[in-house]
Amino acid sequence: MVQDSDTTSEATSDENAARAQMRSTLVAAFSNLSTAYNLVNINLSQVIIEEQYCSGDNCNASVATTSSACLAGAIFGQLTFGYIGDCLGRGPALRLTMVLSIAGALVSAFAVPFSPNNPTSVFVFLSVARFILGAGVGGVYPLAATVAAEGSDAESRGRSVALVFSMQGVGQLLVPIVGMALVYTFGTYDDRVGSHQHMPGITWRLILGLGALPGLLLMPFQSSSRSEPRSVASPEDATASFTPGLWQALRNRRYWRNIVGCAGGWFLFDITFYGNTLFSPTVLRDVFEVDGPVPVVGPTLQKNLCWQMTVLALIGLPGYYMSVWLMDRWGRKNIQLQGFAFMALLYGSLAIWMEEMEEYPVTLLFVYGLTYFFSNFGPNSTTFILPSESFPTEVRSTLNGFCAASGKLGAVVGSSMFKPIIGAMGTSFVFLCCAACAAIGIVITVFCVDDRRGHDVMGDGDVALTDARMDPGIEACARQ
Image 1: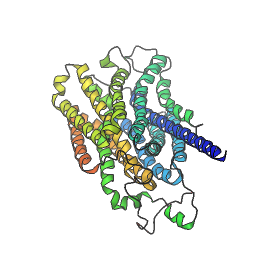
Image 2: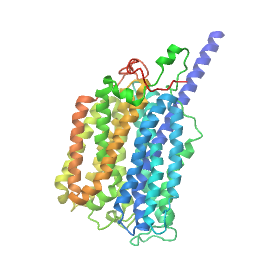
Image 3: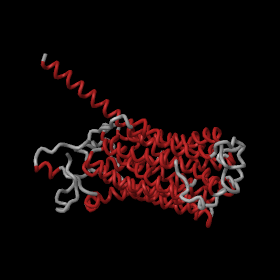
Image 4: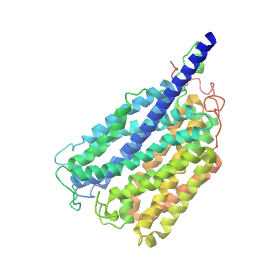
């Protein structure tokens, strides 16, 4: 009877652990959906805000600052919450990111000009709010990946983490769909759009404010993972359980090659991805040869920004699920290599033959959309996974955050330079720069990325253990 009781107790414990991990993985997945929606929704909102406060596309510098503010906040959040995740545990840190995401999204929805005489000061308000939002969504990157990786077995880890990340594709698709629904319901300030004009000012506020909804729905759920803080039984154990700070981890030469592979590849990729994603309205305007901003909604594909963004998202979305299907079969390194290779080929083709393809707008949009497909079926998925299995447990979330922050630094470079380069050199030159970034990404992947399929990330599979003698003045926190 005692043996049966013990067996039943163990089965119940395993079942509870499985449920807890499923819950935390779902929280991580929907956190990624919220992250993507909140990062991309400014694309649509800024067009309506410009119509309201700038009478069209007349405040480029302010728009660029607002778009970059969220990325700057994301860098801060990734560096900060990566370390918090190693100190306090992944679950509590992930809940903190939700609070910031909710606050940033809601405050963005209530943005107003600081002065009636300077209506464009609304962008200053938005920049502050979206920096707060960025800190929240940025923290999701290292924490969600780590939660998913540490809660999966070695054989299915790639598929599980890629599935969590694929929710970003759903979030990106929701932006134009929600935007169209709101524009047709409340209107816009664009006189070229034949929609009702009775409440146009509320449209962009709802687009931004709805970014708080996923976080509000997730708050009641408790997130946990297999790597929550360990208890410390003795002073000797306490010394061993200290968490190295970011600087101490970066000084450890055993991590350098993996850092170059993970952070360098992510930096190069995000230059191309966010440069195109955040300024897709500008790129699409050039692609379709439209004078002035592309209308948010309109009668044709050429003059309907929401439909254009929907088509791009739909072309790119299957790429996520190709990654989910093949991540544990082909391996992270091979998928990243083929993704960068096709991106270089497609961007190079756009740079060389864009003028010829402009005569066939649908074909041009499809080729441009394929860059998103191979981004998602390539480095957009693998760069999210690689840091979660390339570093040991005690610094995994910290260095994951550093790699993600390197990616967002690349996003800042891309988002801040794309619009001026398009204005000075044209869209073809931007595509040439994207092809060059992808080519360099191939080189980094070949020499600095390991394929760790089948390795356990919760102990024996750690690529290296933190050197306790790394620095006697180590800045750390004890696990409670």
